[in-house]
Amino acid sequence: YQENLITSQSVIGMIRTRVTRLDLCSLFRNLSFKSSIRASAPSGRPYSILSSKLSHTSLSRPQERKMASRQKSADQLKEFADQQKKPDVLTTSQGCPVDDKLNIMTTGVKGPALLQDFVFLDEMAHFDNERIPERVVHAKGAGAFGYFEVTHDISKYCKADIFSEIGKKTPMAVRFSTVGGESGSADTVRDPRGFAVKLYTKEGNWDLVGNNTPIFFIRDPMFFPSFIHTQKRNPQTHLKDPDMFWDFITLRPETTHQVSFLFSDRGIPDGFRHMNGYGSHTFKLVNAQGEAVYCKFHYKTDQGIKNLPVDKAGVLAGSDPDYGLRDLYNAIATSNFPTWTMFIQVMTFAQAEKWEFNPFDLTKVWSHKDFPLIPVGKMVLNRNPKNYFAEVEQLAFSPAHMVPGIEPSPDKMLQGRLFSYVDTHRHRLGTNYDMIPVNCPYNTKAKNYQRDGQMNITDNQGGAPNYYPNSFSGPVDDQKWAQHHWSASHPDVKRYNSSDEDNFTQVGHFYRGVLTEEERTRLVENIAGHLKDAQEFIQKRAVENFSKADSEYGARIAELLQKYKTASRL
Image (cartoon, rainbow, N blue to C red):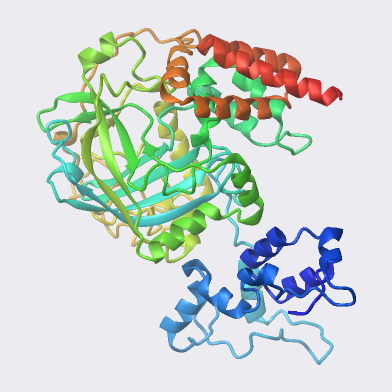
């Protein structure tokens, strides 16, 4: 194609010869396809792609360019073939060898097909049942494996075996994700990112199921289903709906803090390696003496915070929707192992009673000045999944999965999540989801009185008694594992309305004290650019909320909205 005219037909030809996306981008950057380019060619002579104007694109050697730019993720099948040496014998699901996988069995050349063709029916029946329900939230994700290593002693706060000694390593799995999109959605949309960690400890599995933000939109789990519905699709149009999003957001002012974080630069992290992770909730740590403190967990990226500009994120959403997944896979495949440093914040019970905010409010942060970060250890991801479905799609986390020394706090959102996650897994993966290899506590062994159920793939605990108590050496409980005792300060049972708690002070601190002027400008532009598509009365309500956090904050958004309104009338 080196002598082709620079026309749309030549581009089509190059696409058909599988020129890489990078080659095409280079071509379009150098060729505007305007009449001025064609006019610049000598009369009667085709304009060659090899002209001096384009010589730096190296399109003259497409094969060399293609080979030089291949990523590890693109060579996965080749690497498998190199390791395989020779093909295995093809079998049915029952292990029986197959003679012909290219043709169905028929009576004569023209058919009909036969019901006795088990090779075909076996394949088709399994294909019909391949899909499992995708996650309602966090449907699109990437996973990896590695270890957590203790670097600092926190045994005075926590008795968990995972923290028992400096240098101790615990295997772990991590799943990163977007929240609102479907399983085929883009990695570069503006959305919180899930940051879920499973640690396979000797005392059982501990799941720290958080996000890349230290806060969340709501503080009461009653709102969670409705909030997620607003992040999904309109029930009639099946389109994302700005009215749904902003109507809920503005009716619940406690969302203002997280919305401000979401529309800041950190709302679109550059892949998963360049973002922090947070347990977000308040947890309780208990030491060997039975003394307890409240705690928040932080994972700080050692790669440094890096975010995508809005325009680049938009381009990537179309050109490489799996950008984050690809980046993580290639980094690990090339031994560029991403790491994070774990910290905790600690608050005593006495401090919690007197603190200016509710310490269990998920819409607020704990000041690092008042509650400094305490280093704990290092998280290293050094292995890609061997199979995505087996080790990532089936990977199941729950905040209820805790080990001795780590307990829930009165955090209402945490309490709500303790139930909903395991309930979801039983729906998606089945009653025995915890027997799937990636979910089982393989550093210990489950011994209990749970039996049977669909897809029980173990020995079902053999002949051990399936009732308790019993007199026949079944597993027994032990009070040494008792959780920390605490008393509720408000014993009255009722539904407490928290909507009038301070929803704006920390938002103002974030706007004025955390963001630079350039970041504040991008924040208001991002909000106005999205809010402009909502109803005008919703826009006014949003401006009122942002103004309560900072008068300038609201005024700048209102000014931009007015500009959009004026421009739409022209």
